[in-house]
Image 1 (cartoon, rainbow, N blue to C red):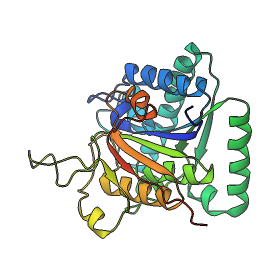
Image 2: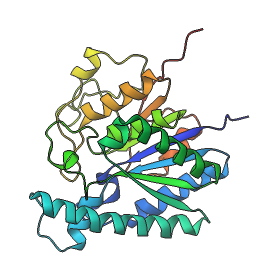
Image 3: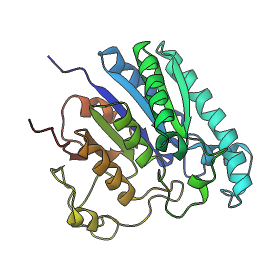
Length: 267
């Protein structure tokens, strides 16, 4: 019998939007279908979703993604509204209730806030509600402007949420199939690494620069996220999110993307 798990799924901007910045409706629908079915099978699911600034920029008819802080925050406010509308609509098709949780660094660093946050997640999951988490870009300037972002296109945020909620598994849906032994954009001979038992300096040396132009996270931020979660015993899968239904294959135990094995406690 398959073990029922608490699963955090992170989806990036590149999965949710077309090249022109418009929302990729099929991605929202496939994601809602997969997560709803995972919950129907007895699992608890949390979604960490990027995309607010990109979607908001398009809805505001901006010629390009804004560079000025106040416009980025305005786009985030508009885009987050659109994102939640789409999620509520598509999850509603499968009779699921969703909740919005917006976080910034202070919510994670303050112990009292962190405890309250964990309690909120617990209450939502107990009620069969699917929390949808994003960074609070409309009020927090640190994540938008900082060179060394705490969350990095929500990769680290998803790991922090996974640790906070004591998840069993973290699945990061990206614009790359997983971790390769060399940059697949430069080398045709690059091989996908299916399983990593331990993340070390050699692992980090395989990570390249930034990711897609619509997102802000590169492979290095994904490795940092995997490192944080795996150290707390959480299995992490990084794979391509172009077809969110790949979640079904991952839950069926297939070798998809790169698996970073969580360090199990020693007794």
